[in-house]
Image 1 (tube, rainbow, N blue to C red):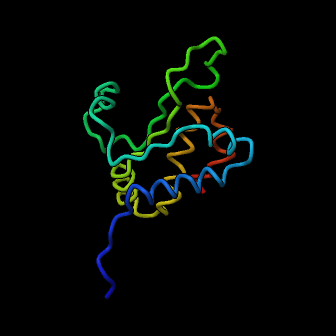
Image 2: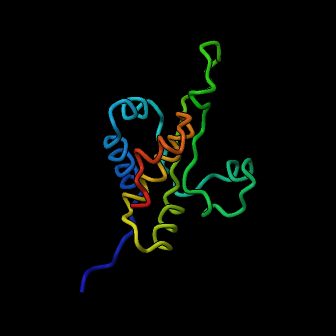
Length: 133
């Protein structure tokens, strides 16, 4: 019999996300590396309130910033663009699915949040995130 199973912590989810960034094709990898990565257990109440979400387990990730396709050199920076990953919501989805690798799910959430940052089309996302395979 094996020992108790312990859910991956915040650092482990961040390591998975950073590995996913490193696995991106170079042009995307370089640009993605400039986005701040935040890993928290669950989305803070103020984010849930702003988005009209009542159940924090419904939000696995969030892009916080202005998409590159909407930025101007004349804009005053508000702070760094950030991608938030919410560990407990990701783990909950992972357990519910039961048939996906956790690192693959973290990568999937990350890529879709990067899509908001870069203004990627569905075709762009599909070329990088072969989620359905």
